[in-house]
Image 1 (cartoon, rainbow, N blue to C red):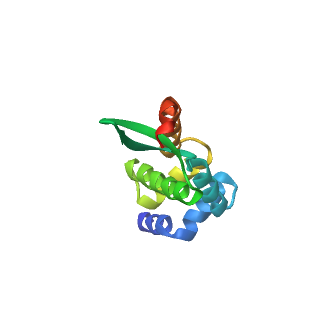
Image 2 (cartoon, helix red, strand yellow; image 1 turned 90 degrees about the vertical axis):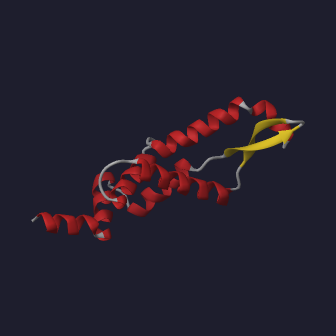
Length: 124
């Protein structure tokens, strides 16, 4: 019985059904919503001006923002403890779709730092 459960959990069709049962939504729409929620509008870039180093907020292109969002989701998934990577990733995606989780915190932290360093925006 235990082996059957492990085989079922590793099956991608089962995971899609699990996400569908937990959220009552299409798994693809959950993925899209998660990536949209984690995508940053602003990132910090380091600029060196006159011997000093400043972190300057810069707007992100949509493609670059989505790439960052996927990287943040994967790193948040890797930091989670527990079961297989697929289940950790599905948990992180469901959390991101609900606007909670580590990836959302990373986005909010980035936006807070950008707001704090808004005075250095003229160095771009």
